[in-house]
Length: 235
Image (cartoon, rainbow, N blue to C red):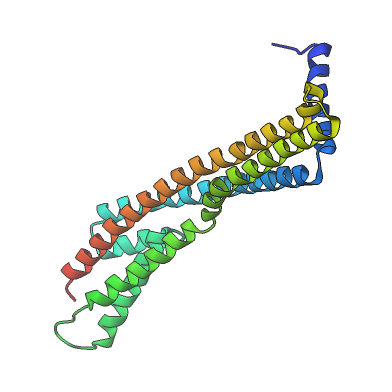
């Protein structure tokens, strides 16, 4: 097992201290830029973990229900499976469709041939599925905003740092390393911070959007199956 020696630990602590010193020494605008980028980065990671858990969990649970739906031998088995999966979008959609169909059948009383209005069933299931997709998409637009905005915030900090470097050259009357280093360092760190906030956000956004599209495809197949099921039923 590797045990860091005192020199290594000292170097790590010194690096952390140098970063803190750097932040304290830069100007107000530089601090504001880095704090904004830190906010976007932390908030986007929070959204990523939360939405990944919600979307992945919903997709897996809905796939299990759809599998049970496909294997069920009769309507009663499907309804029982949907009650066990009532917390999923597909399960909730089927329960709504089943209750609507039952209401239509009861309303027709003692008629010999009872018919179900499939248009109403289809609209109801579609509405439930759309509501579910909308809930899955909620907040992930923040990731797109982060991916779009943070590089420009970092670029603004870069330009500001370079302007500071030129201003120092003018004040000092020389362009040696000691004069330009603080401004150039601020510029480069702002660029890096902007990219570090943007790159994970755009990757996570595309991944989550792909998972939502998978769920949308599953929902479309489910809608066709539900419509076909109620079309075949006879009461």
